[in-house]
Image 1 (cartoon, rainbow, N blue to C red):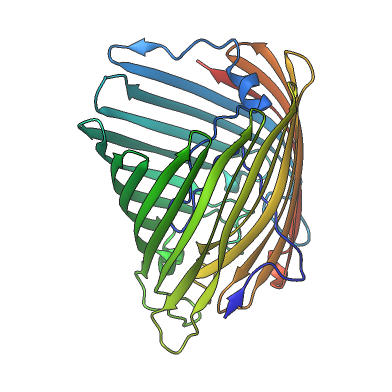
Image 2 (cartoon, rainbow, N blue to C red; image 1 turned 135 degrees about the vertical axis):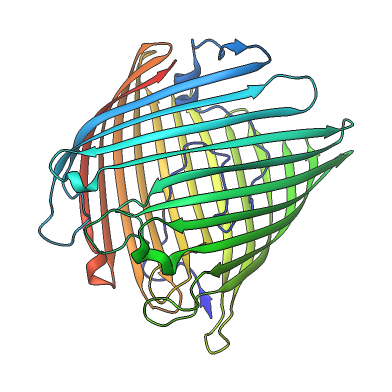
Length: 413
């Protein structure tokens, strides 16, 4: 069965930086960062001192706090409930600065509060530890592992159609071996994820995921890197069938190749293309296949302006009834404009489609946002923003629109 961007339109997604492409299937589709700094990155980092050093570690502590209003907290198609909304999101990270090897951790907490819909209040938190063992100058073994508790956003295509919020507990471990010889860089990775939904009513969504990938990169020139990669992901649900009797265990495999190039000092691009195949464990169900691709470009037409465009299609896991995978197709643009040394204006447009296998559900989503940031000091930025989101779905209960307006502070402590 062939899937892709059809007559319903191309899809759109925004990325904060130009060199980011982490496939949610668990395989990394990422090439070397071509090194162009966007206006937004420069605005945040300029005038800021390096993170403090404590012993043999750099320590990076940050805080995001916002207050605003949402018009449709429960993401309902009709009779929307609005509420003032507050977020407090501290993060803490530490990384060793040894000449060889590396260890570190990062952690976060997020407090979500709604004054008029208090039953939607949640607390999220998590942490990851990581380490790298250098073997000579041209090889290394890296490991990471951690735990996180996160709220499933109401705008997520996997959000349940009920009043109580959903939260997941995730345990994860991973390892990567890297070797370099001359212009060649080879990596092999393995990862495990355990995902548990906290509410017993969602137990049919609890699952294990194991992913494997192998990759070969070639540094053709200092401005051009190419790669080829293969990946495999196995998804096993705790319960044999979901709430409507569909067996959702499956395996996903595929391959992709791509490149990253710095065309000029102000223009960089990267792209990849490949395929994926979803094999259903239930032989009575049809397998799915599709195109996996990514195209991204970052352009600084002036010292004060950055333009980032992105288009991609990939396979993603799903826990919707009757579907264990979805194909996301997306395309988007972000514009950053430094008005003065202290003012930064940002605009985003995003459109994407989610096509769910087996169930026949199709979601069309549009998102637009605008923000204006003011640098109060090198470590403190104030921000005002507006965001609009709209979903049109073949599942009537999934249709909704939401407006969010907020003011926020971003602090590097």
